[in-house]
Image (cartoon, rainbow, N blue to C red; front, side, top):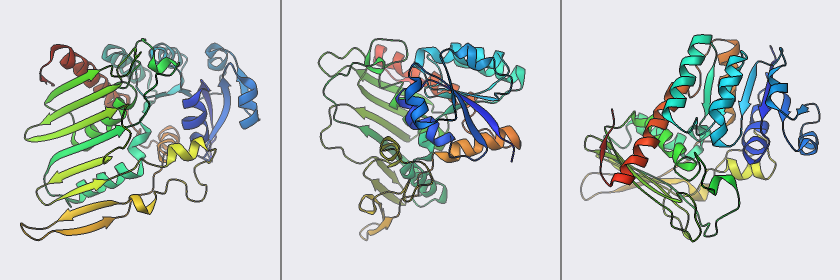
Length: 347
C-alpha cells in the first residue's frame, strides 16, 4: 500500500475532532505534520507527527502530498491557493471559501495544475442522511414534494469564538448552513429559486444565528432550518412524497463520539440509537402503514477513503470543489434574498 504523507493546518476543534482522527483511520493516509500553536496537544494525541508553526514550513516538505485545511473560514481561500501553488493536493474544511469568486478561482487553479481539490462536507456520511438518501433513491416515498431538514440547538448564550464574531464567513449560514445546503443539492441538484430569512436572534449576537431557507424545485420545496434557541427540537428530517412520509428525530452520533475520543472503527462507532430510528408512513387514502426504518451506519471515514483512492487509484473525488462552489453561490444568493426580502432565481 502506498502511503500518502498528509499535513494538517490547524488543530482547533475542527482539526482535532473531525479531521485528524478520521483521516488517520485510513491505512494509506499518514498524518505526518501539523501546523499548530499547541504542539504539546498534538504530540499527546499524535506522537509521530511533526509539529510546525507556519504553513510555509509544512508546504516546504517535498514528500508531503496532501494538505488538509482546518482553519477559520476567512483563511481558506488564501491557504488553499498557496498549497495548490506548491503542488499539493488539498482538502478544505467546509465552507469551501467566503465568496463564490474565491471558490471559482481555486477550481480553475486546481484544474490547471491537475491537482485534487475537495471540500470536507462530512455530513453527506451522517447515518440519518444516508438513510434519507436511500429511501429517496429507492422510491419508497414516491415523488418527493417536501424535504425538510433541521439543525436546531439550544445555545442561548453567545460564545467568545471566531465562529460567532462579526467576521467574513462566520455565522450559521456558513457553518451548519453549508452542510444543509450541500445535502439538499446532493439529493436534488441545484434549485431554481432561493428564499431566505436570516437574522440574529440572541442577545449580543454579532452574526446570523437563525436560518430559514426555502429552495424551490418546481412544485417541490426543500426547507432548511437552523435555530439556536430551541429547547426541544422537532424532527431532524421530514419528507413527504406521493407514496409516503418519513420522519426522523435525533442527530447523527459521530460528532459526539469523536468529541469523546472515539475513532472510526471503534465498536459501535457511527451507529444510531435504535430508539431514534425513523418512521416511514405509507398507504393509500384511509389505510396507513407504519414502518420503523433502521438508520444507516454513519461513516465519515468513507470521505478520506475516497480521497486516498482518488490520489492513488484514480477514483472519483469526493465532494469535488466545483460542487462546493455551487454551495457558495447558494449562500451568497440566500444572503441577498434575506436582505431584499424576496424570492430570487438561481441559475
